[in-house]
Length: 196
Image 1 (cartoon, rainbow, N blue to C red):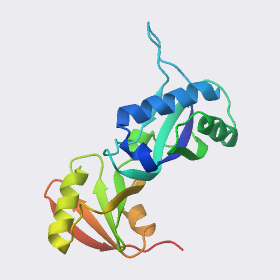
Image 2 (cartoon, rainbow, N blue to C red):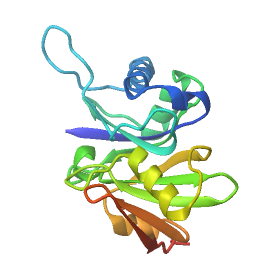
Image 3 (cartoon, rainbow, N blue to C red):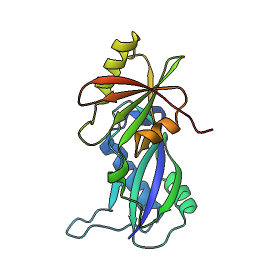
């Protein structure tokens, strides 16, 4: 089974699209693009797609992921360009790549979300997106506001990326990362290493 991993951003007014609206916009753009998608069987077939965990309404994104199951061959660069032609303003495919058969499905590796909070100064917040320790962004923001004595309601929040492990988050992030333990509600300060 061939799969295309599509990385996309969600900015400007598009951040106010719900997860369902984003899915519909991506599906429409994929249909128009001519990408040879696999469809479900039955009376009302749908493309076989897998999305990363839902992004909260009003939060921008630089690295969201969509996994497209394919029925034929595709050139990733051409697919990205074709999909972009059908997307509304604010949604943009950043890159596309064919996945090797050994690569786990998106739903199995999308475990942590990294968020950037900005209001002049920048904070980084990591949250588990799946599993027992899964946390809500709203709760994490309240906790970081309490711990640091900052007003988070006026901050611009962007999900920078989605990661398979906390080590990857730390390798990719400059400075301090605040890790929110969803189960306990604790906020742990960690040092990012930023590769490069």
